[in-house]
Amino acid sequence: MKKYCENCDKEVSAKVVKRKEVFPVCGENTEVSAKVLVCSECGEEMFCEEFDSQTLINAYNAYRMKHKLLLPDEIKTIREQYGLSQRSFAKLLNWGDKTIYRYEGGSLQDRAHNSMLLFLREPGNMRTYLAQNEVDLDEKQKNKILSAVEKLENASATERDQRVFDLFFSSEPCEENGCKGFDSDKTYAMVLFFGNKERELLKSKLMILLHYADLLCYKENGVSMSGMKYVRAPYGPSPENYDILLGKMTADHVVTVDIKTENGYEKHEVLAESSVPRNVLTKKEKQILECVYKKFSELSSKEIFDFSYKQKPYASAKPGEYISYAYASDIHF
Figure 1 (cartoon, rainbow, N blue to C red):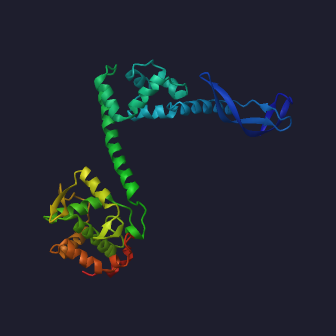
Figure 2: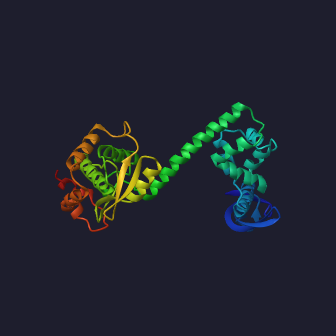
Figure 3: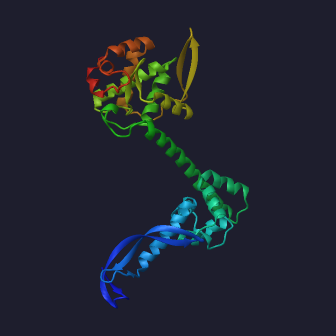
């Protein structure tokens, strides 16, 4: 890189050097990593507007992070999620016309403004703010914001659901899940199919029904239906983290789990709260579920366990281990 060096009074080769520098921000010395140009001949630092500007931005951002202040891009994101211009957002907050413009441009916001922006980052809080404060916006603008709030809330619920599934169920196809990532829609539909078929569907029996439905689907199509992994549990094959799955389905009002005591033993009965959703299961998948149900409908939970105990998929796994779909070809109905 060629640059004019005032010390050498000529154009010279310059090199980029990284060093620690201290900048005063709001009366507080803030240390940042900075890029500087240095003359290759005399070793003196050379002026570079681009590097100096970036260092100043880095100093401001370091100060923001230390004091938990929003970054300019974060402020912009909050504004844009409600579909507001800088002027409209400032108007909504009863701030000066140029306030949001300055903050998004890099000016440091005060703590009170930062707290308000953090509050309004959550869509539900924006709804509360509109309801409890006088704002200088017309009804059309308010309705536009409320529409954005509703979409954000729905999206947030979906994202929360996905985070739960991503945390406890594998999204990467592998042998343990039947070469298919976990499919919550298919899983819910499978549970509802059996829940609507069986009058008193015990949890232990449901787990085995799901297992054989997935195994048969894999045997016939090369992929499982739900994408669930199954483990060898004491009372038969069970989906991995089945307690979390049932808890999520209960929270989503897909099923209810009714616990009864009989002869000193707890019975967990799974009750469907709705019919099987349309267009989730293919015709072939419904046929597989029907086949599995017919095979086991007359069997008690103990009888269906005795059956699975003798089958190769369950017998080949050690307690607590995954049951491989590779043994699907060995199941016989």
